[in-house]
Length: 104
Image 1: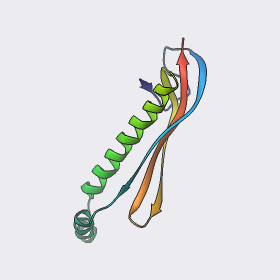
Image 2: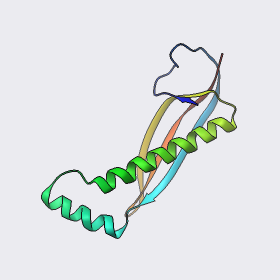
Image 3: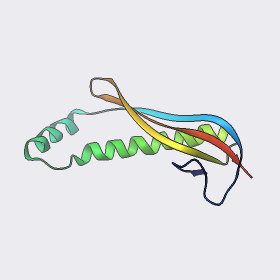
Image 4: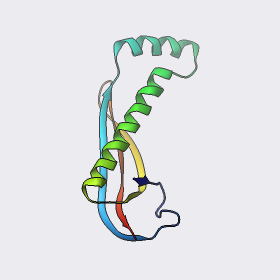
């Protein structure tokens, strides 16, 4: 399924908007990553464990959003956006959302 951050899909015409679709996941840090991250914080540099954690969360949120769009019979999702929020100490939600559309 096509998903884009723009209002339109290049070379395609939108026939109908089917509604908002979303996918989310909540991820928590773990003690092993926190210890290594603490050491990285002292010397500086990218904390690759957290980078991978967030990348995995984004991919899962996208998959769930596309599954939601598929249930509506969509051909594409436009205006895709991401947001995060802390839901408790050490845990955050990654949310992907957009508008499911039917293409001509």
